[in-house]
Length: 129
Image 1 (cartoon, one colour):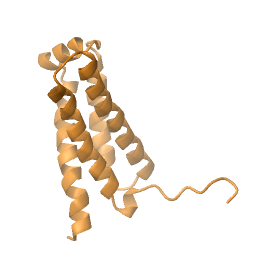
Image 2 (image 1 turned 180 degrees about the horizontal axis):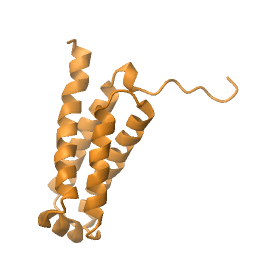
Image 3 (image 1 turned 135 degrees about the horizontal axis):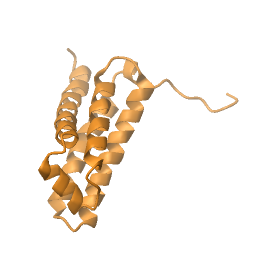
């Protein structure tokens, strides 16, 4: 396995593991997550929706093929994790609570940046070219 392949799979595995754990925790609507979401001002039904999306996103990122779906999954994770960070800051939480989602997001961005050619969208040319 070459360095580029490892450079993709290590952050991808870490990111998938983090998002799977988070997705299961969210989807189970465990009491701590419902309380945390209420503290942030979100309704009790939201963790189930976010958890389900996270789990589907992990499947999309790990499955072979479907490069457009992978782009949407990475985008969804970007919106979710950056939104979590902003939500913690808006709720007056400690900076550490806002940094944690950004660290995970950084791992996800490394996965996205290092993905092999077969997991990328083709080059999009401007109209008329």
